[in-house]
Structure formats: C-alpha cells, structure tokens
Image 1: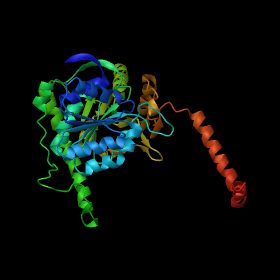
Image 2: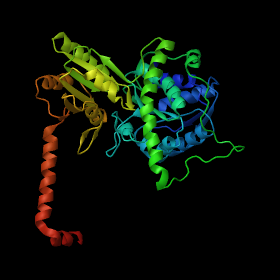
Image 3: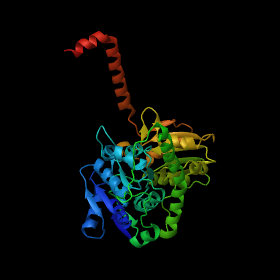
Image 4: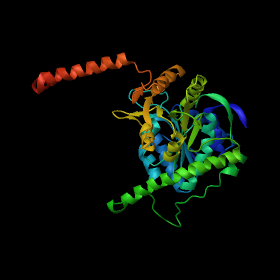
Length: 412
C-alpha cells in the first residue's frame, strides 16, 4: 500500500510482512523507531512473534544467533556504537552461517561522539562475512528487507540492510509498503539449513584448529562470490512480483555515453542525480552508478558499467585513515587494467551536508583534470593546517628537550 510514512515505520512494516519469529530489540538512535514500531505491531497482535527486550546490542545479536540456530527466522537492528558493541557475535553469526537479517541505521562512530549519518559503522564490518545492501531511499529500504530475508535464507548467510540514519530513518515520504500477501508470494516459509535439535544433537561454531581453519575461511569467501548471482537474481524476481525496480547489484543513471562516472551508495545518490541532470543540461557527459550491493562487491558489474568512461569519481561517507576511500579500494580493483582515472571524494562525515554546489564544483574539477586523487569535500583547510602545525611544533619541542628533561617533567 502506498502511503506517506516515516522511513523507520516503513521498514518495520516490511519486516513484519516477512513474518519474523524472533525479534531482538535494543534501542539506539537513529534505529529506535524501527524496533518501537515492531513492538507496537506485536502488542496489537498484527505480528505474532517472540519479541525479546535485551540489555545490550551484544545481547541482541547473541539472542538472534540462538534463535536462528534453533530454526527461527530472526531479526534485529542497530547503529553506530551499538554495531561495534556486538562485533564479536556479528562475526560468530557469519561464521556459523546463520541467516539473520539486521537493519543498520548508519551513523558515525566516535570519539568524538556524533549521532549523525555517515557509513563508518557498517564499513567497519565489511570483512565480517555479512552481506551488505545499501538503500538509496525509503522505498528501497523497505524493499531490501524483503529481499534480504530471501537472500539470507537461500545462502544461509546473514545480511545487513543499511539505510542512512535520520536522512532516511526519520524522513517521511511516499512509500509503497510491501503487503503481506505479496511478500508471501515472494518469500518462501523459512526452511533452515541447520537447526539445533535435542533429538538430533550437533555442534555449531566449535573450535577449529590450524588444520582446517583456512578451509573454513575460504568457504566464507566462496559464499560471497556465490552471493553476487543470487543478489542480482533476487532483485529481478522482486521486480517481477512487485512491479518496481529495487535491489540488485548496481543502478546506472544516465550512463550510456558518460565519460565521467560518479559512483556512490546510500541516500547521497539522490543529490548526485540532481547534479548530473544539471550538468547534462549544460552538455557535460556525466553519469551516476549507484551501488546497492557493497558485500558482495559486484566487481564485474561495476567494470562493465564504466567501460568507455575516461574517469571515475567515488563519493563515499567513510574512509580508512592514512589510506583513503574504502569503497574506492574495491572500485580500483574493478577498474584494474582499464586505464580509467580514479579519484575519491570523502563527503558527509558525521552528517555534514553534501550540497549540490559542492558536488558540482568537484565534478567540474574532475572533468577539467584538476581533482586530486583524494579530496575531502568542504574541508576547512585553515583549521586542519593550524592543528597540524601545532601538533608538529609540539612534537619538535618535546624531541628537542630530550628524554631526560621529559622524564623530569613527568616526575613532577
């Protein structure tokens, strides 16, 4: 049903339509509205499930693991520091191949504390073995959850659905919320690949020694490779049932003759498309390639999409300090041997607005060949240069003082 609805509530209703049997809930902004709405649906008996209020994010994932291991369809949600707090069981869920679905309402991680949106939280778990799907808008956020259960259960692997905190979670817009009857036609009843049963005992997640651990990790690698085709196919099957494009691996926009391609994921794609429309009206051949699937990374699909372009600009809301862009590293691997120039623009950290004017300026620089390999959008150079100079001066002063003087100062 199409209606004006907050993103969090749309996701909650889509999750409810998937009929999870266990929901593990712990509040943390900006995902709290999702689990709150699910609790209302449970209280109103519109959703029949075990709704478990836990004492921490660590417990939320631990309960989801226990539920999934016994054969229940399990769901939870988190964000930011909460995701970091549950890291140990996050890795365990992937290692045990449990098809848990989790919403990550993307938010910066500290210190310093910041509650606004960027992608640092989910990017920190990119090697955990979970699949990661990113929503451009609230329609896709709702749709991706339905697809996530299907993908997770077909592959027996956990899936994160990432949606930008506040930008999407708290935005009210028109969403065609998946109806339970449609979801039933698309999502088969859960038939778990593994199930703990007292009458047929087995061990899941036992210790593995050096003689077999490499093989275990290789299998985690192989399931990611297999997931590329599954994610693409499930997106096509979703379109056939629901009648709209959603999910899949990548989403091209005005790419047919583009000599400059902007690659990004999440809600910033809307801004990028508006900028590209304006640039096209002025004769610039720029296109946008949206990434829906970050894990598995669709190397072949990205390479096919950008062949023929002269340059690629990756706009991303996270980076690896001392190295550069996170997404750009995968894009670089996809472009290997093509001769296509690659630049990274780090933008929107901690919720800083990404304006059309700022994006247009960096794209103009890219087209003119002036864009640096790594750019921080709207960086206050005066502030950082002053702080860098102060830090270096302090280090030089302490080095000149010598160890004896520093030891004497420290003993006072």
